[in-house]
Image (cartoon, rainbow, N blue to C red; front, side):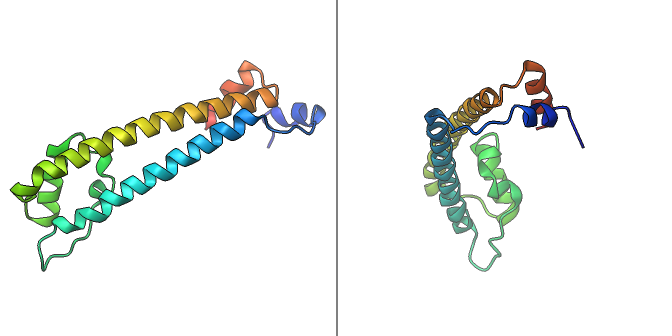
Length: 142
């Protein structure tokens, strides 16, 4: 399969060392991803604590991906649906604060990762001297 990029690239192939910017951008993205995954895991490990004793604390996809729920009310409704019990009144404020704070941090880190990925893409496009048409082709299939 040939998309027109290989012959051109092969004809102009040269050994290049990635610029330091690439390493910095990659490190930033990787660190953010690790932090985000750890934070998601911290709260996800606490969600089964809301399950009443004697019930199966199995999490639905929505609870596993709690940060995608629009707000605390949606999280609370999902907890009620899955565990057949509401979040205890004494704990609601703490859960709401935790979810609001972590959701904002995940959004911030996701934006940071997207920015780093865009920088990496730009550096790679420059390394291979891609034309705007070739860049558009690559981005349309990715």
